[in-house]
Length: 411
Image (cartoon, rainbow, N blue to C red; front, top):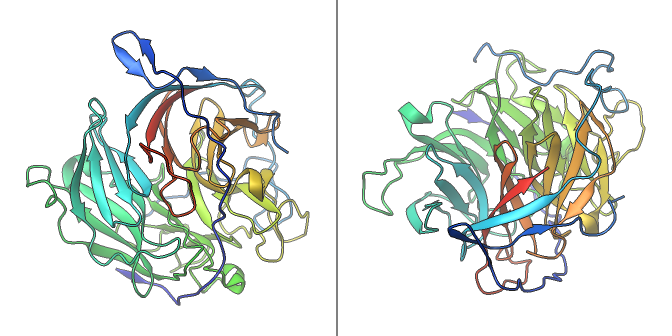
């Protein structure tokens, strides 16, 4: 188990106004009822282990810490400038403050409830939601609670579920063994804390965790409203962390004996890798610009000295930016040559088409106002995504059936 440092306090995950229309009748398709058919873009495009880290800069890009994003990789073409999203079904509804989601072998889902501190299993065929257990020690409040969820790379043999959660004193990462042969509600073993001491606050707790292509564990953290933490490399706040599954620093991290992988972040809630194993992260801005960043080891992403594309020496500029009322981004996923980004205050799903590390067109918005706040996107392979709404997080306007998990096809 690894230890980090100090708690912090204030800031905000913004609230948006919901302009959601009630869906008409469900569409009968084949032998199943689909929640909705396809949709067109909504509005104009918007402004210990010895593993080497994936996602190194492409040839020709500057060293970490220089102004600007990495140069485009050699791909000559990218996806089409215009994409499409079709809502193909509703996997589950009536969920309470869903946050992290992980797909099990066989296709069922595990879903974390931020405010309840519980994990439930969703049967994708029937939509049945069964609570498998509670994570001890979760102290929900503000934007904190039971947040990220990830399966061990060796889940088939070790049955370990990793969670990122807020306690009374910090944010931490633990793993619990999942035994589906035990009684419902009692299927999680005792938590084994692998990393602790990440600063906590009422806001900006970060919380997304994911295992990378290198089978190392990555975590996005927030600066808890204490802006100076983001530039302090000795603090775990406002960082992306990289560690072994046991919580130890990885050989090849920017600094020996440190899990800090990148810094200068405000509040990272989205992590995803593209087909070339480059790491992307979505980040909340303050009042001006939300960001999609290409993450490189040791790079400084500028907060609080820079927000958006500042073009300042020593800071890495984002690849794409949005006004905060159009985004407030949480989860991201990569599919069909694009990063797909869930927007909370923005109440929409953003598509950022990429040729290597460069956008081929302006970001496109889909589903605007249709399902309210959007929290998590999960890539299922090929052109399929899961999308998780977040209307019951205290900042939405929940309607009957909220919150939901939807299936999408995208291009």
